[in-house]
Length: 264
Ligand SMILES: [Zn+2]
Image 1 (cartoon, protein in one colour):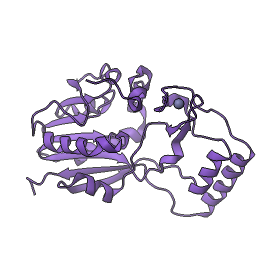
Image 2 (tube, helix red, strand yellow):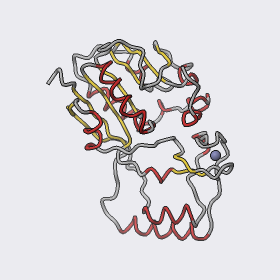
Image 3 (spheres, rainbow, N blue to C red):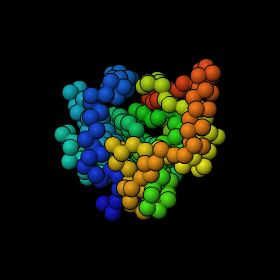
Image 4 (cartoon, helix red, strand yellow):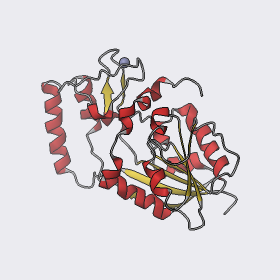
């Protein structure tokens, strides 16, 4: 494999994968929704972007599972058979798996990697794709600021935003067989107030347990400031807008099952 690109440096930290997902009820619910959606005929699964392998391990009680990830640090925790690979160049023959499973992978891919990854998933699967992504994520909400270079970046490295129609375009010629929402309602923040809070209020998203690494300079020094009076004014105004608005809550994840053109 080539050297780890800067936007993936965060994932080579061991502590990123000590995430305790298995103990999170929302995460467990999402896994149940995904697994329940798999067609009965499925016997083999490629878990692409398997991370620390928690989902692959759950799947392994029912299916023949192989995990694949670009992160060596993640794969050291994986207990099912696994390979280190870039998602846009998979070391498997065509139609090696009944389903290629990608849970929270696509939102991390830069534009130039997205289409080649989908093409590889379709080549290796042949039949089914199971894809879970954050639903219409407000990417700026979790924007962090690097105190070393001043660069801004999503704290988890998300760079893509998806809804059903965008996924339909990306997955073509596969067709959408079923889909579901799950997870607790996503936090909201008025987009204009958020920009004011960040640029004038000096308050950026900060969550040290995420172990962010700046993709611009590689520093792990993030702005932990609480912001100035403008930031507090934005928070108060946003709060009053939230309480006076109905129906703004949006589910966190979109889970989708795609069927290959050969099956239709
Ligand atoms: Zn930086």
